[in-house]
Amino acid sequence: MKLRRRFLVEAKGDRTIQKCLALAFVLKSRLKTSRIHHYSINKLCQATGISHKTAEKYEKWMLENDFIHFEGTADNRVLIVNSLSSHTTNRNIDASLMDPSSFFSAYRSLQSFIFMRIQHNKDFTQHLLQSRHKPESPSEFRKAKRKVKDLVEQGKLKNADVKYKEYGLSLKKIAKDVGCCIKTVQKVVGYAVEKQWVEKQRNFRWVYAPHVNHREIDGYTFSTKHKLCIVHPNTYSLSAAVSQSLSY
Image (cartoon, rainbow, N blue to C red; front, side, top):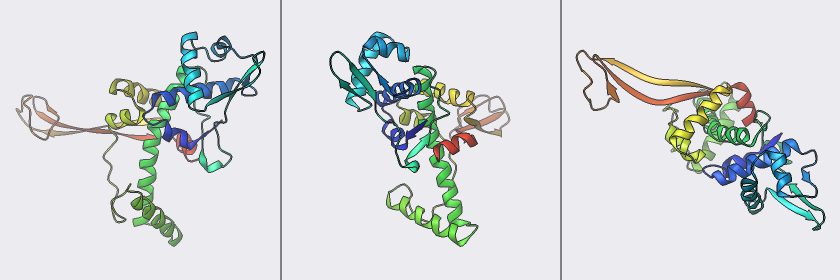
């Protein structure tokens, strides 16, 4: 299944949009024609596995955000799930990795893709700057130069000569984009790692300091009896399948 790339942008930090999109994704996966004839809340519950109360709330949200609409008469009211993909291929991502087996799994998959999109953008910027400074061909240099110029004009880069530095990706940054607390975002990252979509690298730097004895030392995160430690944000590597999905 294909998903409009802009949905990941619109869902950034907005859990209502995320839940609407996850539910629409489940419906698209389970309905042969994207339609529920003789519609009722009970049929929506049967199709998605959510409770009656939750279905009533999400039906309202999905209507307000243009994920569904209704056709037909009162005797045969038809719920139609609107298209989730664009006719233009490069405006979509490949969402076939996402899990539509339940509303929760679709929701967690979507949150993971929002998180992984951050890392994908970091990887893209890194590759772009490397191509700008150390191109393998004149055509690669010209292409990278144009894209770097666009990023500078958009305010995403300070200047065209900036060099890429890896500072990791903090849970706070991920939580802001996903729109949840640190505790929840740890579960989102854990889900992506469990699915083997992402490989996580913890970043600790130890310095030998005899007899520091757990004292607080400025510039270090914590200390042990004989060591000082600086904890940097984790770094993440996307699987080839995820990179391909987001680049579709």
